[in-house]
Amino acid sequence: RRQLAEVRATGIAREQDEAVLGEGAVASPVFDSWGDAVGAVGVVMSGAAETDPSDLVRETARALSRELGAATWPPPPRA
Image (tube, rainbow, N blue to C red; front, top):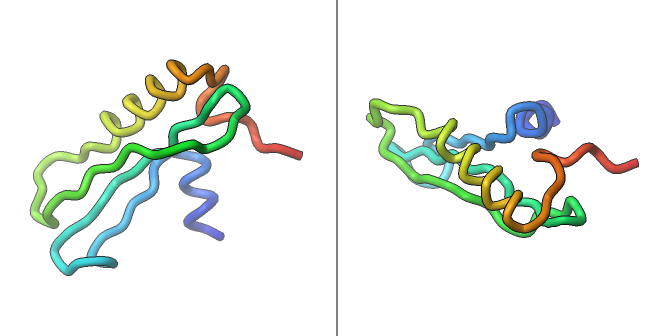
């Protein structure tokens, strides 16, 4: 639950060494005009990566969501 709260707050999901030792990933959801998650943008990198692609991944997901008609990103939680 803590991880989901962090993803909701930052718009970024992260993993390190979970699937493959020495690799990590950063991903961000893409939403449509209804506020439904319809995809994601992600990057897999070596554990020795010198730069953090989080901002680029987040901005790409926002841009794609806007193209699909999302009014806000991330959309507000549903009741």
